[in-house]
Image 1: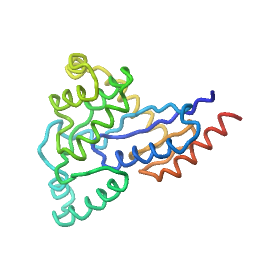
Image 2 (image 1 turned 90 degrees about the vertical axis):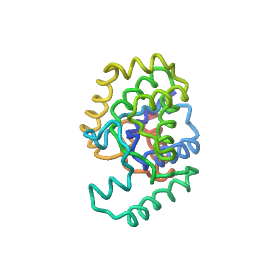
Image 3 (image 1 turned 90 degrees about the horizontal axis):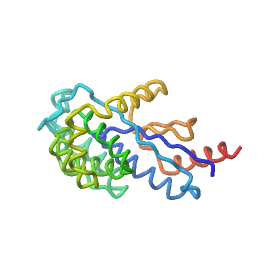
Image 4 (image 1 turned 120 degrees about the horizontal axis):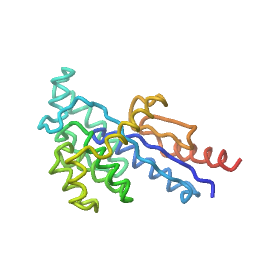
Length: 216
C-alpha cells in the first residue's frame, strides 16, 4: 500500500469549508484507491479575536464591519447557499452566528483521538450553517459532541481545561509555514496544495498525481 495523506484546513464558521468538504467527498468517491487515503483535519481560525459566545448573525456582522446593507448581504449569502444546495446542503446563513472557534477546534482534536474527527467536523459544520447555533458556546459544543458519539464527561473535561490547545496552534503554525492563508485548504501527498472549495474533479486529479508519485 502506498499511503496518500490529505491534510484539510477548515474553520467551523466558514460556509465554504462545508461545501469544500462535500466536494472532497465526491473526489474521494471517484478515486479508485480511496482505501489508501488518510485524511487529517487541521485547525484554522478565521477570526481568533472573535467572542466565544455571541448572538450576532452574519448579516449583522457584515453591516457592522463592512457597512454592507441587509439587502446586499442577503444577496451575497444566497449565492453561497446556492453553491451549497448544489452539493446537497441546506444553508440558513441569515441565522448563522460567527464566533470564536478555538474551543471547537480543541474538541475536534479530541474527537480525532476517538476516531470521530470527520463525524464531529460534519456535525459542527451543519450546526453552524443550518441551525443557527453558536458553536463557541460550551453547552452547545457538548451537545454536538454527544450527538457525534463522543463521551460527554470526557468532552466536558477537554473544554474545562486547555487540552489540545497545542495541537490547534501546531496546525496553525504548519498552515503559516505552507503559506495557507484561507480555508478550506487542501495539501495532498505533502506536495500539492489548493485553497478554496475546489471542484471535485480537480481534487480527484491531485489524488491521482499523489498516487503516481507515491508509487514511483
